[in-house]
Image (cartoon, rainbow, N blue to C red; front, side, top):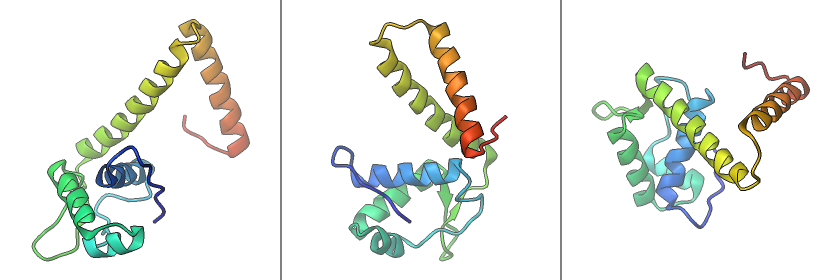
Length: 130
């Protein structure tokens, strides 16, 4: 588990984002066991209280669940899993649109370039997201 922390955002928020990205990309699968809070803190070299806070927030959001004294697991709730993916897509699009607006380019031109880049990138990296 490799997370590069920035100095802008609280560490627990960055941990949550990392989990969301891993869920959205399929690295963490529904029902998969995740490291204990203490193990996560050791792996990421963060304070155990920070790991605890991230897990608490993720449980409240329905991203993970813990039954009794068993290890925590990624949710199996398809609605939550779809929402995580949609949230990450929306964030990326918002960031992109905000940055591109300052260039004063038409939406059609932007869409054409994005489609072209998407296809080129797919061809060169072997992605197939159709």
